[in-house]
Image (cartoon, rainbow, N blue to C red; front, side, top):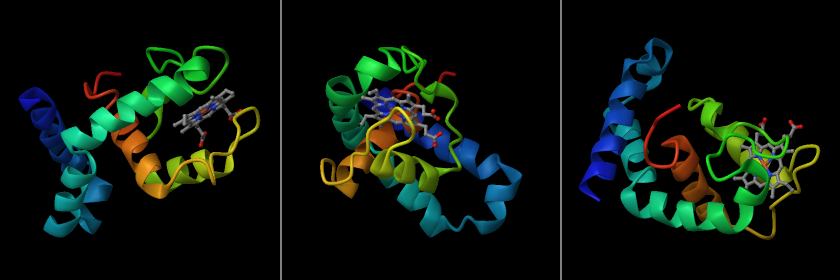
Amino acid sequence: MKLTMTTALLFVLLFANNASAVESTTPEVQQSIALEFSTDRIEKGKKMYKQLCLRCHGPEMNGGNNAFDLRIFPLDQRERFFNSVMNGKRAMPPWKGVLSEEEIGNLWAYVGTRGGTLQR
Ligand code: HEC
């Protein structure tokens, strides 16, 4: 638990170190990123990932059966993540009506921290 919190904070630091992000990042935004990637959300995202996404994206998020390698999904493209998951993309079905925005946010926390590890 403690480790995951540290990882979330590390991410915030990494994000803040990204030059282009720094200009538009306020303490409030950083705070919301920390909340968005809370341990709780990562844990919930993990369960959902296993139930819904693993069969295509694989246990390691590496893209498994010809799906996207989620370990390299750009962390500064939150909108794109929500869009693709809501509306689907080519062989991926849309999850609109199945998942709430809150639930997609949990998945984003899981994918955005690379399964709570940040390893790529
Ligand atoms: C039926 C198989 C399948 C399932 C289930 C599935 N995906 Fe995908 N997903 C794909 C494929 C295939 C692609 C690559 C689409 C393309 O670009 O051709 C993809 C792409 C993506 C992308 C990248 C989209 C982009 O913008 O390039 C994201 C993010 C993603 N999936 C997230 C998820 C999440 C989160 C779940 C679980 C809710 C999930 N996927 C479940 C097959 C699947």
